[in-house]
Image (cartoon, rainbow, N blue to C red; front, side, top):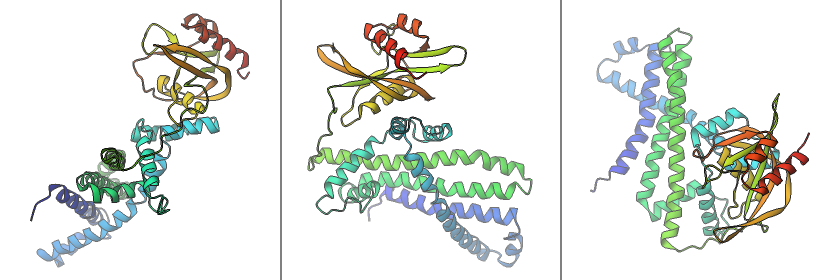
Length: 373
């Protein structure tokens, strides 16, 4: 019989995601409460009987911990629905972003994840299950795992390893919560502080490993589909207008300093200051492009007040470019993707002097004219 290290590791992690948390819970209950008097049990169940009782209790409590910890998957799913692309749509449609603490949790967990892989894997699934009309019968992740079980067991083993890690830390979160609840009333501050310190780290580790498991599944299916060439996915629709790029004239109102406008260094010439803008991705709404590009280049979340018509047209290295510009206002701050380019907020007059191109100066004047008072 061949030994398969991957499957052994996954089975071992699944075993310890039940038994090890259960053993920790059993120990906590026996030492920190009177629910389980381990001293009395030790006298009655000496030797092998005591260890058998301990293992049985650990196994049962481990299953309860596993059941309770599964509720954390709902928290993960809610945060996953608020990654960068969701925040862009939120700003475009509702003129505001999610609360700062939600964005902070999302950034800590998912960084700049835009869910591009899950969207592409979803389209592959829709195409594959269209003839059966079963597109909604299974979610993207479970379908990817089912496909890989048949087509690429090695890829599935890697995914299961990440899953096993995430399940262990998910159960460990329940253990830490019980530790804090038991230690705090008993004034066992060392145990309480240790549990409180480990809790956020265990939560981040659980979400990190779960993200790796899901993304690994999507990446594997995309790669498998590209390699086999058995399925053609319809191309995403291009820009819905003549514009190829989108950006914004972003302003903010500051107490005492008045209205300021946002400029960013040009990507190819660090001494030139321009308005933030970028290319419209296939199938992307121009407004979403403007919000995304402003955020990626400057870290600023900005809502749209209106559109400047017509788009400006020029040529870059012989290629025609048409940019749709929007009047935008800052609604929140974040982390920019491009850390090499500086950004600056300036009053109108200084911004016009600093701006490199005449088109930018013209849009700054229009923004001052049409911005909400």
